[in-house]
Amino acid sequence: MYDLFVLGELMIGDTHGYQLQERLKRAVGPVRQISSGTLYPLLSRLVERGWISLRLEEPKGGRVRKIYKLTEAGKERFFELMVSPLDYTAETELMFHFKMSNFPFVTKEVRLASLEQYLNYLQHNLKYVDSETRMISSKKMDERKRAQVLRMLDHRKHVGLADAEWVAKELERMKTAKE
Image (cartoon, rainbow, N blue to C red; front, side, top):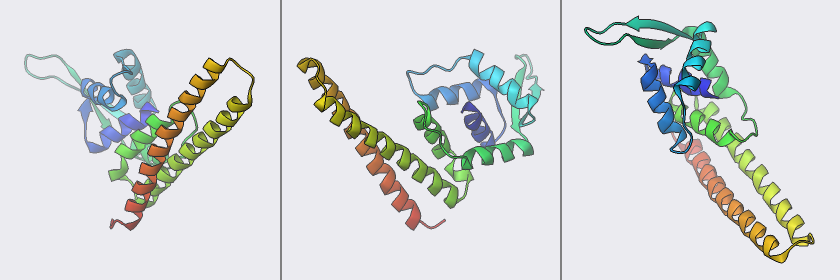
């Protein structure tokens, strides 16, 4: 998943690891921390696979910086990841956000497909919430617990509906937008 983020950032241009780490921290938000112990092994794997290259830059009087550059094989991998279907996992939303941030580098068809896949994912979750709501409503359980679980499911439904509405509008906007 972080492969796509790094490759997408390098589509913009060469950069050093610290800069990538800072951008990744901003992309994933305030509660998910990305350590050097996560990022640098990932960068090493991407270098080993030939998707990025590494050069050392020695500024006068400063520390040596590792500068990463996207290779042609890395561009191919980036496009493969952008067109690959979204998996339904706990990371689906973040993966969609990574894809969405890279929309400037792909065709309109790829952008539309990503939005449609995410909308399908949201609709899948909404069906699950409806199913669970029906099941909990008919299940024998402590009434206080039932009421609170139903409130939690109601919250999930409202968040899912708002997200699905936004994605549907974005799909329509993008369909009618000129390239």
